[in-house]
Structures are given as structure tokens and as C-alpha cells.
Length: 360
Image (cartoon, helix red, strand yellow):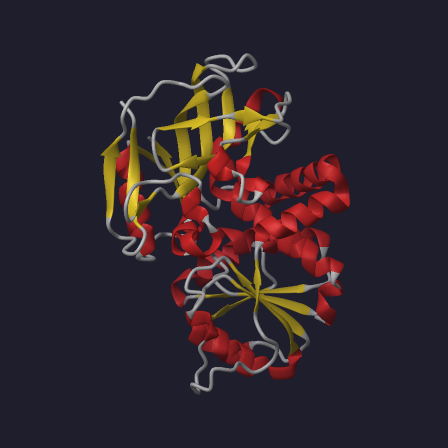
């Protein structure tokens, strides 16, 4: 029996589990059975920014509902394609559900693209699938970590690469809001390894200061209500929190010392333009949204697919070493558990020291 979770695109907390009809497999298609995926803040961003960036278009649903994309593992359940056998496993972009039918193209031993017509207008980064038998990133012992951290880590990797190419805009420090978030931790790890001269300052809530300090990824950890402790040196900010008032405080505190203001993800993007004085304009530079897929395409062009893969793999191994056992795996069974985890995450009440994995 096939199911998926349908989310109301206008009221995200309204989510329901839906049984899907049985359908014949077209020639050249492959039916994947979803084995596992992670539910992270990244998936909330996909939903919040679904209309703005086309995330709802990957796995369409009817009426006012949509299916939130996830990153995870799947196995070939049925194949009408000569190069895919039942039982082969893949990793990639999956629906919050139990099954996905793909139309493989550009097939190699390492992976393929889903050539389904409705997916072609979107970034190719999301249409690529890895075939685990020949995937250099695949480690059977680290599948949970890859689902939880992999996409978020890659965003952090791309931010560091962009900042380093720009000589960090002349900054001496990088300030990361929501420092306990997995994307921030990825950026901090890559910066620690590849840009060691840049001081890493993590901002977080009072309750998360201990967790962030114990990660060892930051030179300094500051609670949100102590922003005046941020040193007045040339800095760049990377905002993962999406809190307009916090961003305004940061801009106003640093003023001309803030050399670049980077917005990551798209959660509460409208709120980020707010200011404390209501003027509608922040002190310092205008914040600029970082859209990871565009930077990924640019990085692959610069380094070549193989070179990019090697650089990512090297930093990924370093990140896993840095993070160690900081994150406890919270594995849940059943598609309803995915719906419940997603709705809970929308409310922001998720322990940063836990990573949620669903076996649907």
C-alpha cells in the first residue's frame, strides 16, 4: 500500500496522510520504495518557500495541497528500465511518502537524472540520484548522518567556498545566527578547516549555548540577548534564524563593520526585512539571499564534477569527525511519524541535539 503526506500549502500545520492509487509502470520508468529520510529545518524551508522557489512542483498533489521534499534512501521495487534491477538502492530527493516513480535518464554507474517532464524547469541539483553501489559518498554506517546533515552541510560548504572566493569581503570574523542549526554547524566546520584565519562567532538562544560550545566548532558563542558583546571588527554575518528583529539588532550593532549580510534558506524571508525603528531600512549592507542550487552549479563548473565531488567528500569527512556523537539519532517508524515530526518542527520545538530519521 502506498501513502504520502499532503500538506496544505497555505496552512502548513494542516497535514494529512493519503493513500495513493495503484498505477501501471510506464516503459522506461522505475518505481522506488522509500526506505528512510530525515526531517530537518531544511524541509520546513522547502515548505515555507515552496511557491517562491518551486519546491512544491517536484512532487505535485491535488487542490491546495503539496508534498514536502525530503532527502533519503530508496530501493528499486519495480523496473521497466533495462539498466535498473529490483533491489538496487539509491539516494536523493524523495517525497514525504512511501513511493516515487522516476524516469531515469543520463544514466551512469554512479547515478541518474529523473527526466520526468514536470521536474525539468527546476534546478538539476534536485533531480540527481546516486546509485549507492558506486557512490563515493555512501557509507553504510553513516546513512542517518548523510540524510540529516548532507544537504545542510553542502549548503555550508558552498557558503564557505563563496566567501573564500570573495576573500571574506575583507572580514576578520563570521557571525552565524542559529548556531545550533545543522547548516550553521556545517559552515562552521568547513570554515574552521579551510579558512582558519576567520574567527567563528556563533549566536544562539540561552538554552542552546552549552550545546553549541560543546560542539567545538566556534571560537566564541554568544546568547542572543548579549549581542553587545560582539567585537567591533570587520565582519560578515550569515543568518540562519530568519528573525527580522535580531537581524536589525546585528546590523545596528556592527554598522559599517558589517561588510556582507548573507541570508540562508527562505524561512520568514519577509520578516527579515524588518527593522527595530520601522524605517524599513537596515544599517549597513543590504542582506542578500544565498540560493544554494545556483552556487552549486557555479562550483561544479569551476571545479569540474569530479573535483567538486572530491572537495565535498574531504570536507564531509572532516565534518563527521568534528561533529562526532554530538547528535543523537531519533529513528521513528511509519509515515504518520513523518507527518507528526514535520508539524512539530514547524513550531520550532525540536531539540538541536537530536536528528529525526523516518522509516516510512
